[in-house]
Length: 230
Image (cartoon, rainbow, N blue to C red):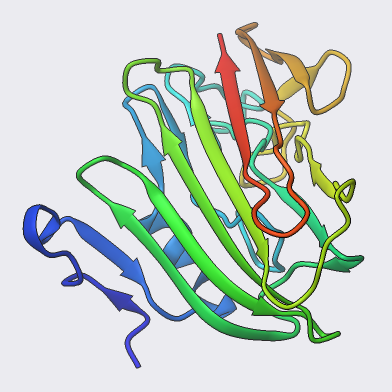
């Protein structure tokens, strides 16, 4: 079965959609590249929100080329990742490699730049959920990335005050492909991460804003905004 499709769009979206129809961890790297998003100033590699072994997360900003030492060539270093989400559903960590994946679809709309993923997942304990994830890189604000997650329990009731979602900045050192630490962080935390380029002194900060709306039976939409600021 083909895991990538290029002909699912119809009407005004004909030839504009790229679809990942089957999830396989063997194709993480390829799909992260194909589904990447950018606006000419920054580029976000499309690693999935939840963590998987073999993933490569990446956020890159134009004009931050530098070299780690005089013996090496210049390269574009990776910024701290702000998109990773640790999601616990009724005490079980969401992962498409555990439980049963009943439905999966991820689509890149090349016309508007939106990446949308829909999942129906049954946990190892038999709890079923419908999850949707959306992500964009803004064109009218070159510093802005945004995302939204919705979780709908399908066969269980969730406590109204259940808010077990963790969002944080990972890779705080901004390591490059060789594991070098190109950014010097000033402080820590997921709300704001100010940094300075170690050799050429470019100052940059990333910050994240999370809001959540919960109901007892239906959907928990969580819009997430990531802001790389120079």
